[in-house]
Image (cartoon, rainbow, N blue to C red; front, side):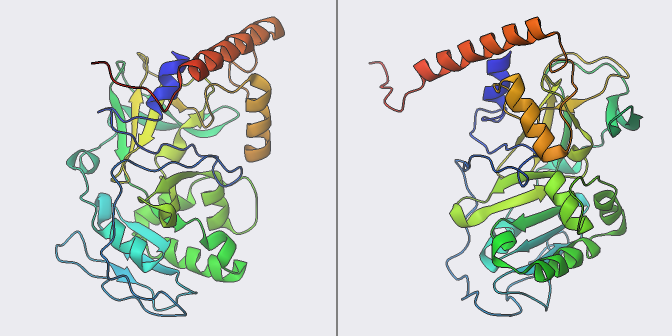
Length: 321
């Protein structure tokens, strides 16, 4: 099961390679990957230098009309589409990356995702979370949602904090009312500027096809899924920026729905340190709180799984003839 969890995060349901980084991305950097089928911008991308108002910010179609901020810092501007993914999205990014996003064709399943099998409740010692309202079968899709906010990774190191906060505020305030409220209802754990804190706490890393396409994406619905080192859901983010969650086993009515924010093959001590440093508390899931003898045995099995994976991992595999 652990190996399948590990593999599911690297590959989509159809076998296509996708990026599926966890929510603890900004607080503690993770490895990088790129979708096999990236989204590529047109060659005419402009110079991107200085403060400017970007060109080409509108497209035909009622659901693909973008507005762009007149206030930009360096090459970073705010782009908003109030109907994208059915409920709106804002970007803090560059003109070439905006063009990449504007070319995405939103899958019909994303627009039709109604979440009829889940509801939001208060979870003791966790805050808000999601529970099943009926029996959910293994493999069943739970959610397929687009991001509310996408922020270019380099903006965090290239912009002055006040300039970044200005763009972040503008991006969230430009969203439709319900989408803005959904974003602001999320918890932050690090303090400081609220909108940035929420992104720091609840972001997934997204790649738009090349090294200049690295972004942090916030999916308000997915942020309601609390962490468990042995979760009942698996997730991935596809090349259309859609965050998918599926049941890994049968789930009973009233059971909390969880994902893992971490690498499932990490040892208990590494998982505890990661959640403590990134979320401000050590993980208290059943797998982390089992008796020491059982925990040590689990760590031994994880080491064995890692050794098996390493022994089978090779870039020089030749097909049989």
